[in-house]
Amino acid sequence: MSNRLNTFLNLQGQTNQSPYLIDVDKAEGVYIWDKSGKKYIDMIAGVAVNNIGHRHPKVIEAIQNQLDKHLHVMVYGEYIQDTQLDLAKSLASILPDNLNCSYIVNSGTEANEAAIKLAKRYTGRQEIISCKNSYHGSTHGSLSVTGNEEKQSSFKPLLPNIKFITFNDVDSLNLITEDSACVIIETIQGDAGLIKPTQEFISALRDKCTVTGTLSIFDEVQVGMGRTGKFFAFEHYNVIPDILTLGKALGGGMPIGAFISSTEIMHSLTHNPMLGHITTFGGHPINCTAANACINVLKEENWIIEAERKGQILEDILSKSDQVKEIRRAGLFLAVDLGSQKKVAQVVEKCLENGIIGFWFLSTPTAFRLSPPLSITEKEIREAGEVILKCI
Ligand code: PLP
Image (cartoon, rainbow, N blue to C red; front, side):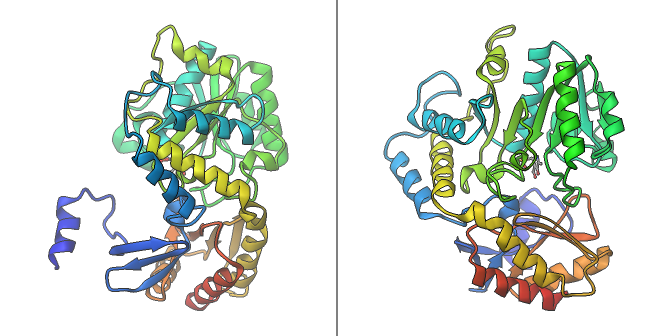
């Protein structure tokens, strides 16, 4: 074993027993190169992070400009900083009126933790409603609302007072009552293997929240920022949450998360107790300026509009294989179901050998996922699609 591999496997904390082990040298646009010079088309984008591609020049420029001004200066929320103001304005410009106040944190899971706290604080209620087969992050609170017994069982006790509804089962919405502080839901379930809500379900959920005074939290950490063909997935369904959580692609490649609500709801974190959610590095200037550049790029380019067409091209190519049992897709986010865990492992491995990076789902062993940068060209998507088809 090389020294480098040994260090990775033994001195770096590991998360699974068979890591990908691509030894990264550099990344640009839709490509990643390893240390041997092998070039990969990145059809995962760091798991739905690099929506505008790797090292977008506008992100690099924004970071470089900010490096000359200041890095961290104070815990979140005390000083007025250009990069945070710009990002707050930028987010408000692409969101509905009731989602005008954003609180910038460090990750998707922190955004969900804080959103749940905000809902409890605002409503004065304790009960939380979540969905079976959901994924909301790996810290204790987010894990508590992650509807996956296998992921939870070794870490109990988790948060109490959580009830799980079934995604797309309108009857189960009866669990939402005047005792419920919030419902947290992925607008489109990602790690469950890409399950879209029915219009009936998501509208009924929204209505039920309104009637019972329960805050709806839509987790768009994975499906936000253009991935599904709209800036935000809820725009497909004509419903607006009370709180939105973002992460991943928001930072243009830098680590960030955000929870967003109306100013009225958000300001309940300022008292009783004051400092209702605090985070030292939330709103870090480098990450905020990168996020701001990322939003500007997504506004200027046609990539969000084209996500549906490009996704369809990929779906059409992969559908040619009789090994493919089903493709579930939202824009440029695909779950390719082969009906067998073994086949998925073989195909993902073959793809890697052939210079294509695909990836697993956390909870759906029979499918693999594709979520390339939205900046991928039609030529690149056809090229990648044909290689994946051959591997299948
Ligand atoms: N919510 C959803 C829907 C996610 O897919 C993820 C990560 O995959 C998270 C939350 C957690 O985000 P992070 O890994 O940044 O904590």
